[in-house]
Every structure is written in C-alpha cells, then in structure tokens.
Image: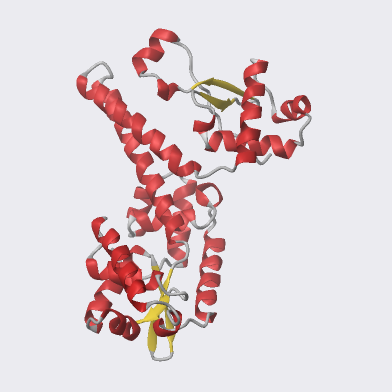
Amino acid sequence: MPGGRLTEQDRRQIASGLAAGLDYAEIARRVGRPTSTVTREVARNAGPAGYRADLAQRATRRRARRRIAAAPQSLSEATRGRDDERVREFAEQFAGLMVDSGVPRMAARVLASLFTTDSGSATAAELARQLQVSPASISKAVAYLDGLEVIRRAREGRCERYILDDRVWFEAWSDSAHTTNRWAAAAERGAEIFGVTTPVGARLEHMGLFFARLGRDIVGGPVDIVAGEHALTVIAALVHAAMPLTPEQLAAALDWPLERVISALHDADRHPDLADPVVVCGNEAGAYYVVARTDRLTTAQRRRLAPDGSCSTSSPSWTR
C-alpha cells in the first residue's frame, strides 16, 4: 500500500465509493489504502451519510495548521516538577499493556512517552534521550505508528516533531465498531448458507448474535441519566399506545417539545439495551412502534412464534 496521507483525489474516490454504496474494504482497494485508513477518514468527517471530499480536505488542513501552530514543550519541560521515577514506571506499564495487545515494543514505548507528556509531542532526539535508544529505533517505531495514523508529523526547523493524534481513541472505537459489524454480518450469512438447524449453522447464528450485540454496545456509547429516562418514557408511551405514532403525535401526547421526542427516539435507537427486550422500529410513514428484539430469539423460535412477524426498520428521520 502506498504511504503518506490521503490526497484530495483519494477523498473524492472515497466519496464516490460511499455514494455507490460500496463497503469500506472495497473502497480501500480502489483507493489503494488499508481499510482502517478509510474507516477512520470517514468516521472523523461526518460519517458515511455526511462525508464530503471537499469538506474533509479542508478539515484535514485545519487540523494540520492547529498542530503546527501549537508551541509544544520538550519532554523535560513537560515532566518538570513530577516524580520522574514514577512517570517512567507508569509509562513502562502503559507500554506493556500495548505490547500485550500486539503493538511492537519500541512503538509502544514511543507511544507511551507521547501520552505521558503534557504536549503529547516530541522530536526524535528527545525520544531517543528519554528512552535511551538509538535514533534508528525511534525512526522505525515512528514509521509504524504513522502507518496506523495515531501520530502526526510536523516540521520544526530542521527536525520533525511527532504529535499524538488526540482523536486516536475515537478512531479506534470507530474501527472496532466497523470490524465487529463485519464479523456479525459474516456469521449471519454463514448461518443462512448452512441452515440454522444444522450444528454449523446454529454455531454461526449464535456467533452473529454475539457480535451484533457487541457492535451495538460499541456504537451506542454512553447515555446520561436524563436522556435515558426520556428514551424510556417514549418507549413506554409506544407500548401503551400499541400502535405506530409519529414524533409529532408523541410530542402532543407527552406534552413535550418535538426536539425532545426526536432526541429520545434517537437515543432509543442508539442504545437498544435501554429497552431490552423490546426495540423501537420505524415505518415508511415516519411513525414508530415497539416490537420484541429479534436477537433474543433464534431463527427457529421466531418462526414458531410468529412466522410472518418482522421488525420493519426503515431509516429513522431523527433530523426531519
């Protein structure tokens, strides 16, 4: 795969691929980049529904200018006044966790050093002194981290400064969510091919249910207490009504502002475990209703209970 940052042409290809309904893996093949690079690029620039090549290019330039404009501290300045021994001990433990997760040791030590400085940045010379290793070792580790796009480079006179990407955890989360959903989809396809009544099909179906639930947990993220209570109230209203209701009808019945209802529906959709074992569904008329969560039942159980029952989940119109 070619190195370096995504170009404006790359971003136009990504936008075209999303518009054509291609998955990230196929887009990555066409652009000639790792799938994780495309996933992070789309996630940090409004997601697949709102991605625009021109806006993504501008946002990237703004981020680069902000990083270069910052006046970073050296490693010695960033740790001044702290217990150096305790800082080094923590950095090594932090690096050890990353090594256990599969990160090469030197790359993990460099990343831990960047994380444990206030500026989140350092030059190769500073890292070499801090870690007591050769510049060549630092260069190899930096190339690895740069390939993962967890650090950025900025010119500083005749040197390069390596800067920690402050969105690294969000991007890791996004990549994990995408990967988990792909596992779920693959397992579901396998269950259909082998048949859910066979040992292989049943095994794959349970695997798909596990990854589907895990993916929802990753995507949903945290929900605060008030938002959770609003979502539960809307779900209770739909259960009580026992019929599809539009957001406007819910707002009138609950005597709530329309925006609160829309936000509550959005939270109910993003956090399905709030309403477990039911789920909020939408129909083509823009109304919402609740049904049992199908992933609580196997395919055979669903067929025996309600052969024709299904959850019609058309795309919600939270921003109407």
